[in-house]
Length: 226
Image (cartoon, rainbow, N blue to C red):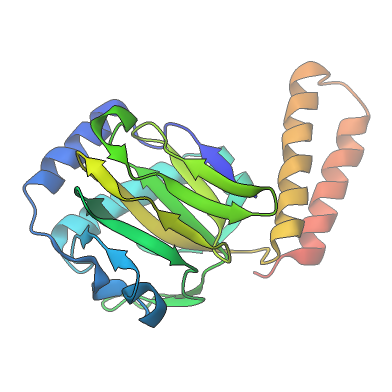
């Protein structure tokens, strides 16, 4: 399941992030790579224990806490502290699958990576290349979103970042451990929740709402790990 979460950050917030990130010290992106990723990764990253990364990451988490769509799609149990990267001309990230368990060096966080997230902090017209390419059952999905938008996708997916040929691709990336670890079950719950929301808007007095809402919560009760 590939889900776009629009406007996680406002244009003003993106501008504030970029100003701070432009003035920050960057390091080799392989500081957080596993063995497989280190063979394919060529980018830069804000040190995850830096003040910039911690404070900007907290702002991302606060923004996500205000997004009903994010909650419905991810059903988050834990969210890994957001990290930040950038790609300049010639940089890319080859095919890889994200590490199954992530640990944070300075926080007591260890999560199972059910979902991966990329929050775009550069507008598409700022750079050429840099598309996030995700392999799924329908082929290769190409993602390049407006600044402030985010994409969620299964962490089990084979994915890559295409080489940059102009400008800089700047973003935040992190992982989510969901209360529902199975992607198919999570997708069914998301579709059901979206149908309930539509029915609430179109026919708020429909008796079917009680039945559908009960079914949603009973399935969540059956599948959730809390």
